Image (cartoon, rainbow, N blue to C red; front, side, top):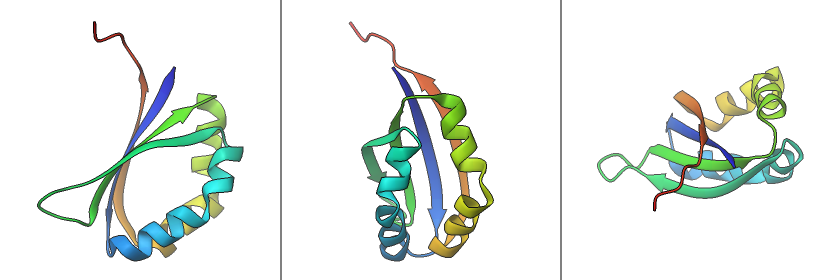
Amino acid sequence: MKYMLCYNKVKDYKKWREVFDSYKEKQIEAGLVLTNMFRDISDSNIVHFIFKVENIEKAKKYLADPVHIEIGKRAGVMEGTIQYLDKVDTN
């Protein structure tokens, strides 16, 4: 299974989360299923979240779309990173 680990530093978590949640259907269309979300203990405007990814290329295309980039700006994303991961057995 492939995953996408994301980091965002945002201006205002509440506003960011409202915008983020309003695009759930688009995320699913892009083959992204949110599995976890975390807020930094020392700065609640730092967010880490994990998606299961059906298709890496489809996810990259969605994230590179200028519309998606504009949505991030509107949501107050100040910086962010994305990493694609393979899940490994922990046993």
